[in-house]
Length: 95
Length: 369
Image 1 (cartoon, each protein chain N blue to C red):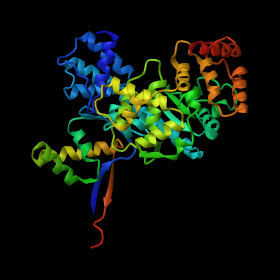
Image 2: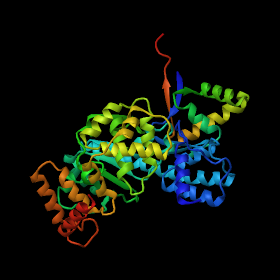
Image 3: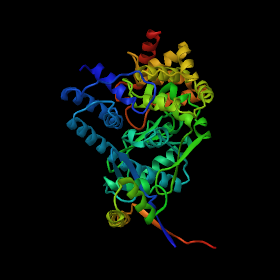
Image 4: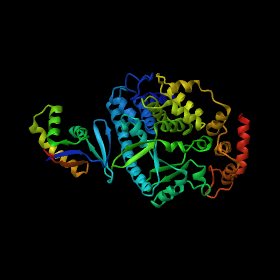
C-alpha cells in the first residue's frame, strides 16, 4: 500500500514571489507558505509518496535525509490539518 | 515625473512577460517620489503583478524599500482575487443549481487562461455573462442570496432586451456584474449574442467545479470592447490582455475578423489592436495587426464611437445612436418608450426629461458630423 500526497483540489492559490498564498474554498482564512514549504507545494502538484518527496527535497537542498524527513512529515501534517493537502492510499494492485 | 511619463513607464512595466516590446525601462532605481507615482498607477491599473515581476527579474531596478512596498500592494491585490474567486465559485454553483448557464468574463478567466502566471493578472470584481432569456431569473436569484442592485432597471424587461447588464453588490462589499452583452449603446446592441455561446473554454478553478469562459476569439473581442469603450482614458490591463491573446499560438485570426464583421465591431477591434500595439510598443506583427493598421473606418462606425467619448457624448446621445442598431421599428419603439418613461429611476443621473435630452443629443450628433 502506498500513500500518495497531493494538493487539495479545494484550494485557491497564487504564487507571490518566493511564497504561495492559499485559501481553502470553504474558509475565509488565508495562509502563506514560504521557504522550503513553497518547494513542497510545487512538488505536491502531482500525487507523490513521502519517500519521493524527501528524496526530491534532499536533491534540491543537498542535505542529509535525517535533516529532511522530520520537517517534511511535520509540514505535511500541518498542511493536512489546514485542508491544503489530501492523501490517497493506493494499493499495490494485482500481481 | 509627469502623468504622461508615469503612464509610459506603466505601459513598459505592463509588458512584463511579453516578448517584442521596444519599451525601455530605467537603468537605475526611480526616486521615491517617482516610484510613488508608479506604484499608485500600478494599483489603480491593476498592474502590481507586472510591477513585482519586473522588479524581481531585474527588468526594473528598485531599492529594497520600493520592492517591499510593491510586494505589499500585490499581496493585498492577490488576497482580494482569492476572495473573489471563492465568491465566483459560490455564484456559479448557485446559477448551475437553477439550470442557468453562464460564462466567466475577464478577471479570473483571463488570469488563468491567458497569462502564464495567473498572479500577474489581478482583478477587482466578478463578471458573468448570462443569456438574455435567463437574465431576470439570474438577477432575482442573486437578490435572493443577499446581493443588492446598485441601479434600478429602467423598466421591467429592459435589461434582458436592451441592456448591457446590471451591477450587484454583495454583503461582503464586492461587485458582481451580470452581463447580457459587453457594453451599452450601439456597439453593445450589434453583438450577435448567440456567437458568445457557440464556443467555450473550460477550466477548473478549485473544488472540482468546471467553469466556462468565452472562446478564445470571443475573449479577444471582449478585451477590445473593454479597452476601447470601457473608460474614457483607456486602461492598460485590457490592452495587455489583447497582446497576450494575439501573441498566443492558438488564436484563429480569421475567426476574429469574421466575428468582428458580424458584430459590426471592426472599428472597435482595429482601434483596440492599434492602440495596444502603440501603448505597449510591440514590434511583432501578425496578420490581424496588419489588418488593423490597414483598416479604414466608415462614417457609421465613427459616428457610433463618438457617442461614447466625443465632446457631446452622453447617455442620451448613445441611446439615440442605439436606435440605428436595433433591428425594426417595433423594437425601436419599445426601446424609446422604456427610456422616455422609466419606472426604475432616473436614467443617466440627470433630472432633465429624457425626451428633451434625446432631442438635444440628436442635435449634438448632427452638429458633429
